Amino acid sequence: MSGRRLVVVVLLLLLLAAAASASSPTKVTSAEAEGFVRRCCRSTGYPRACERSLVPRAPAVGLSPRRLAQAALAAAADAARNCSAYIGSPSSSSYASKGGGAMGDCAETVRDAADLLRQSAAELGGRVGRASSPRFAWCLSNVQTWASAALTDAETCLDSLATYAGAPREDVKRRVVAVEQAAGIALALVNRLQPARRPAATEAHQ
Image (cartoon, rainbow, N blue to C red; front, side, top):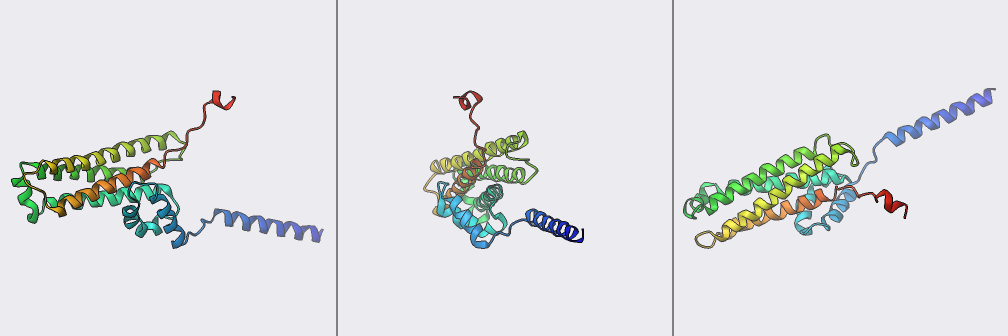
């Protein structure tokens, strides 16, 4: 009996150890996180810009596609906010006042883009539920709509610069292009969160 009890105790200890190991999150190294970010960036239209922006955020991202998309949205929001502030800064105020409203319109649309991207990051960082849940589908649809609208705002800003009285300064145009790229990167990574569609029941039986 004592031998059987010993076997039972050992088995229980092994089961408890296995359960504890399974419940503990696997630690991700910096190299693994950076590799994950770089691989995901290759699926965007601007892989180098994506890496420059998001590789430094890899430790917080880990191996989570959702956290990566959220980080990209936050980075794009920062770029848009800084761009809008730059256009409206004292050193650039003459553009808005003398450009027939083009610079003012551009600053406003980029500010709208910043708000949409910040809203998207907050939505994705909330309780979105499991990937297959209706809640997740609803949240993802919202984020896709807002991020797409932000990208359109950046493109509209570039169109406004094309109508500016005289060639816009390169530093302004460069900042707006950076916002357009950041928004495009964020949208691409958000779209990767879309769950794969299951085949229809009729197709499954064929």
